Every structure is written in structure tokens, then in C-alpha cells.
Image 1 (cartoon, one colour):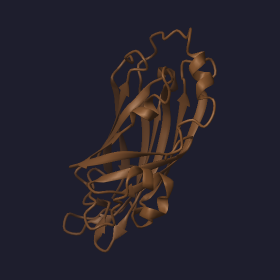
Image 2 (image 1 turned 135 degrees about the vertical axis):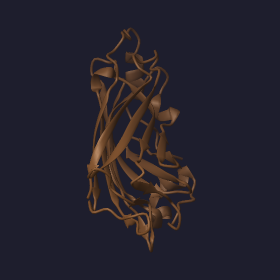
Image 3 (image 1 turned 45 degrees about the vertical axis):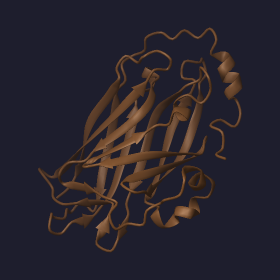
Length: 234
């Protein structure tokens, strides 16, 4: 069985929800930075394995609960799990023993959030995030404040990461609020790579990032926030 979302303190926070005024908060917004390595790009005929780094910050004032994160790559970057070792373990098995998918490990990362963002003193939540190659998806194993697996489905040039309901609302009336995340993704085997560069336009790869939000408990001032970020290339 996976570790509960909060080992201690959730009950107390839940009791503290009573009487909290859920006033309208500022509209959510996000900022991001990104880079690729090597910056020297490949071509369509000779793709080059690439290490992709992304950092996303969600404005804390919005107190928003994330339900999805979508990364959209430009035509100069390709994402594919073809020809790579893929993790086929269940979410519980991966959470209990990450070594079952050690051959498909594809980077590292971290995430920060707040538990009960409307409380006077929200509790900070810190996660270690480890990506793994799955079948037409990237699995993100969270450990630390909770053990959970998020599924980042790959569709064309998009990766859409669904945030589980248990992470959105770990206890009745108690929500989490995303502060930010960082991830480094890279995996190569033979001529196959998870992220590869196939060109470079105007000396940059322009990546789109969008975060969708859930009601916590009221609808946020905006249902989503998005931005575009450039990773230098040549």
C-alpha cells in the first residue's frame, strides 16, 4: 500500500478548515524556464539525443490546486518512448520498490506545494520527483510528502500530466496548492531517445506550458494559466 499523502497533521488541518473564508483570489499565472543539452541541434535525418530541463512556478497568491500540467514541444523537438526500456509495473509496485523499473529511469526532479493554502499557516509539502519511461507516457514517481505516480500521456508533441484526485484533495475539505516544479528528462538507448532535437528555429526551441486548475472548493479566478518559454539552440 502506498504511503498516505500526509503522515501527520492532515486531521488537524482539516479541523482548521471550519470558518475559513474562501474569498476570491487573484487569477493564477505561471512562469517558466527551460534549457536543452546539447544546445547544438540535430536534424530530421540525424536526430540528436537531448536532455530537457524545465522549471515552472505557480503564483502562490492564487492558492490554486493543479489538476493537469501540459507541455507542448515545438516541431524542432521530438518526444517518443519507442525503442526504450518501458516501466510496466503497477503504480503501487513502482511506489513500493522503484528498482522494479530502474532500467527505464529517465531523470530527476522536485516539486513544492502547500497543504490547506487558505489556512493561516499552510503546511509546506516537498516531493522528490523521478521520471520513468512508460508505454507512450512518462511516469512521474513522487516521494517525500507522499508516494504517488503521475501519468504524463504523450500525444504527438504534447505531454499531459494528470494530477490524481488524492493529491488535489488529500482529506475532505483539505486541498493542496502547487507552488512549483522542476524536472530534468533524458533517456537514450542505441539510436532511440526520449527527447531528441531535429532542428532549431531562430536559435531557440519555444515550449508551451499550461496548468489546469480544480475547484478548491470554489472555482479559481481562471480555469488555467499558460506561458511559453525559449530554450536556446543552434
